[in-house]
Image (tube, rainbow, N blue to C red; front, side, top):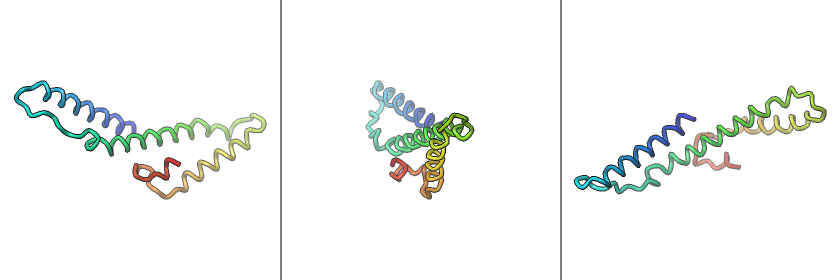
Length: 104
């Protein structure tokens, strides 16, 4: 997922460099393409990848609750574990940025 994010940045950087290069050239036709049209879906996919990375980071961070000896923490662990189980049971494709269920 991090590679997809990097790839999107590189594509957009290459696009901007080419656009600038062609704009400064008197012999080349100007770069007249919609960035939203070209990168819109990829940008949405990158936002989804970032959300998934955040979810996994949170799961990793709080998974240690199960081993904590702090008094009263078990109720928080049970609640957190229930949320993780619910998330794992979802049957939709988390990578499909068109599916808004992930955002809720």
